Length: 186
Image 1 (spheres, rainbow, N blue to C red):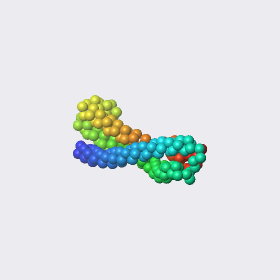
Image 2 (cartoon, rainbow, N blue to C red):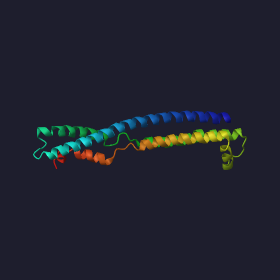
Image 3 (cartoon, one colour):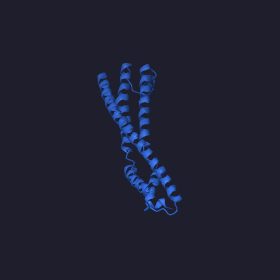
Image 4 (cartoon, rainbow, N blue to C red):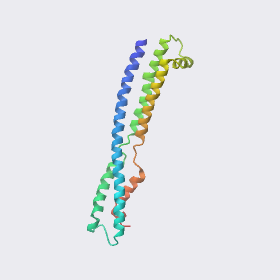
């Protein structure tokens, strides 16, 4: 029976490894795009605030004046940026589901069979909580526990990063505000 637990744990560990590589690469790619878009949003807001203050200093300026042309170009760029970021394309809730399923697969498909291998190596006949605690106090048990904690910590951290990839709604509101001509002239 030891070969079954061993093969089962190894094949599940390979699947978990592939899933984690996929998750990490997706989250890092989304994080890169999120950072770039966040910088674009902040730049457009500050540029719009500067243009608005410039226009407010010129009493007779309206959006048909030649001096207001940078504003019109800025508005077009803001509209393009809003179309790109308004629905938080970097945030993907399915990543969280995949992370939680990977937690479960790791625990059930890898840790439990490895624990059962420890049980069989110690010639234990009953599977009780007391026996599990005794096995965790052995060197292989400590190693298994530490590896599990580290791996679950990595998945937790990646999931935390993935959940933070949402744009600030106040900044999106400011972009919407500055996407309209009239808001520069009041």
